[in-house]
Image (cartoon, rainbow, N blue to C red):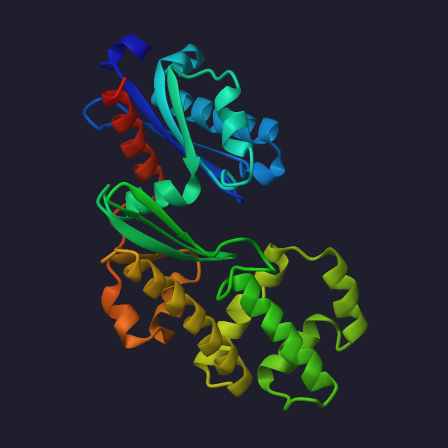
Length: 296
């Protein structure tokens, strides 16, 4: 199969996150031609590495499509990257040479929102390792929270982990009532609080988030400490949803690795605002690539 086998133009959507990068190539009719994956592409890994992983994922998608690597320069691309909101990041990306026919860079939350609502107005709340609220309303972007752990990202997996470790250490000191959750957390540190201190010195948000499934499991089993932590986290997610609604987003989709387990803990008025996710972030990027092509 060659590039001439497909009608021009070709579009590629890319979702570059902190755990990996996904690319999908479609033709003008929306037919899927190929998909590709690569390593983490969030801008915190550095712009050079981030852009390199984006191109690697696109080349992998070309290979699956049976298209030569030279076809890269015929692709109209839209790339959502975690960290684009950092000062100066978007300007630096736009000023760089690129291998595509055209490219649009944006925040990964933007493409996730576009995909979730099939390019209609709406909002998303992402509940994963971190948390953030984001909405597109009448061409306006609304962002709430998501400034990074530990100063923000309330209600996230990392936040659950942090609170679980705190209560476990208090219970170890007999300043709080020990529960099955606090005992299980301390087992991870061999019942030694100074192992927790040594771990903390190197721990990332992802490391803290590894405790989230433990917290949710104990909460669902009725553990008092775990239920208190999850109720507090759910209230933070409630606040994100309500803030987006107040900003004009009438429909909200809940995304992220903790979305399904957190949803039952949300307030009734918040749950009534939630709608099913219609597409993923790569779908959103492809929407954006097609939209940009019509303005060329």
